[in-house]
Length: 103
Image (tube, rainbow, N blue to C red):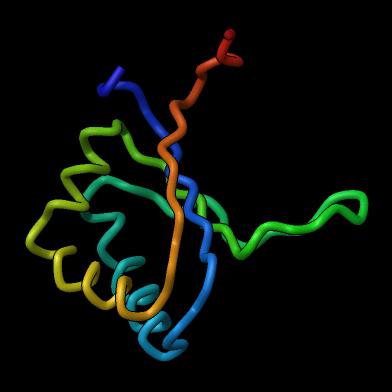
């Protein structure tokens, strides 16, 4: 399954350093495309008055392996340090085209 395309969904849970986060977002956004990813969407609008998510970012990658290679790249490593110092985030890899998981 590592060769199938994936979405990466990132939730920005809290921001400790807004300026650092802006720097991270700008530089990471510039790096995603050349390393195989694509920024698909960002933001979040609650439905039917339900509690909303924290801000979301959705990326598309050609594979989980491509996303993980981006995370491990020398180009991303200093950005990850900025991200960790600037905000708390949660992320999930979501396979594209996978149907509902059955228990």
